[in-house]
Image 1 (tube, rainbow, N blue to C red):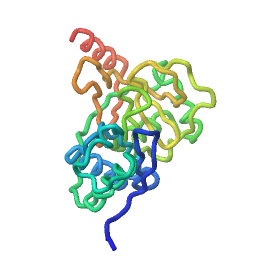
Image 2 (cartoon, rainbow, N blue to C red):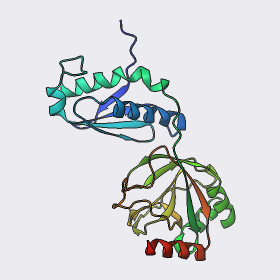
Image 3 (cartoon, one colour):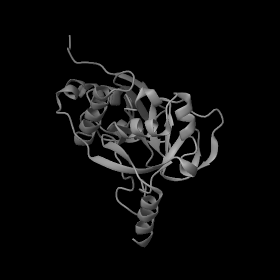
Length: 246
């Protein structure tokens, strides 16, 4: 009998699978997600397209036709889905053996409150805190970027202090300006582009998080870490002016 581990894998349509590697939002679980993504990049199977990390799972996209045509690396003659699942399971024993990877630490300036953070007072009133206390609590942690999604370059961050965790708005706004910093439950994040959204907006950063002309276009990647720090209106205007001249 084989001692090979089997991962929790489910079909995600006819050309993708979803691999669950744990529960909840925790750095150790996300490290397993990153490790499996790394292994697939280093040892891709024929037909592999890409993998997309999330909080505790990894989506793997593939070409069913190329998987069907290939015999390299596959130890089964089953359907493309069965062949991919078998291949992924051959990597299971290596996931925990990889060293912990450290992402970059990126400092993000934020102008809190006022017209740029119209929901800051709601967060403060919800938790019976002052505005300054909310800002201090929000700027204290080092946040881990668990995944990029929802909109191009949008970072989903873990590590928000539960003292300021606040539910989404019951009625989302139809337009959130780019750079807006928000809170939704135990998450915080930054809107890189103008989109609809229901997060509680507490500030805005002059830093561009998504620039299509750059490579990569997203400033942040899964595994990076963020620290926020407060700036004044003058500092915000100066940083925007510098960017407009670049």
